[in-house]
Image (tube, rainbow, N blue to C red; front, side, top):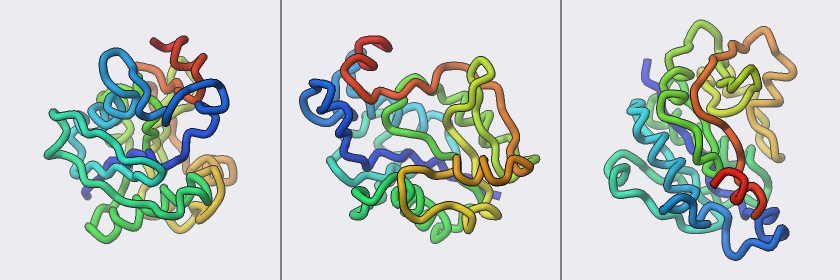
Length: 191
């Protein structure tokens, strides 16, 4: 069974600009690179069978160490919500024959490769979600069995299914943090 990583990085980053940020949040400088470069590198370093980066609102830089490991998936419907990006990534994974995906977010630079690997290995349940100090976060593994249950539009993805079907979910303790960089204050707090 092959498993692909999907990094969702297609949104517009409107909360970042509304908080006084300049440009797109994923391109904000963060500890010597951009926010998204850290997230891409972490997903690629997990060495899953394939790594897809879903983009939409802006072009994204790829860190040199991850350049040969990632493929971009374009989501022209990104304005319709995160669910469209998830669907775009899953469509590509399905087309390429993967039986599962591990999904993370491009604005979470503190998620470590080990979190991606641990969640990918947690195959006893159809859904596995990373936890950090007992709190659910990202990434989330989704077996192909649950793909039909995922929303097609809106700003939620797997959380919808996890709420409706908690019997399908396993929690996986992980190192690191799944803090989102959504605002200028978030960027300052996690730098």
